[in-house]
Image (tube, rainbow, N blue to C red; front, side):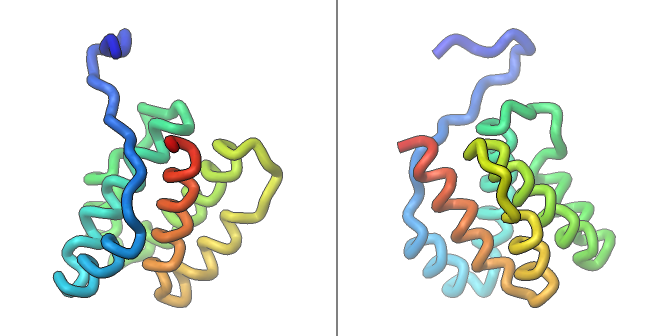
Length: 121
C-alpha cells in the first residue's frame, strides 16, 4: 500500500496467536508482555485512526516512570478505543480498568489481541 500522507509507514497488521503470546510472556518472565503491550497500543491506535495518539514505547516509559499508574489509565483508554473501533457503546473501558487495578493486565491484553485479530482477519 502507498505510504500515508504524513510519510510514516503504516504498520502491517496481522492476526497474532494469543496462546503463543501468553506462552512467550510466561517463558520470558514478562519481557515479551512489554513488547506485546507496545504492539497492542500501536495497532489499536492504527485501527482507531489515531496515529497521533501516544506511542507504545511512550506508554511503557510513562508506566515505568509513574510506577504503573499510567498503565491503569492506558487500560481505560484502550477500552474506549476498542469500543469505538467495534462501533459499540460498550463498557470495555471499565472492564479493562478493573482488570488493570487487579493486576490482570495479561487478561485484557488477550481481549485486545482478540479484538485486533477479528478486525484484521
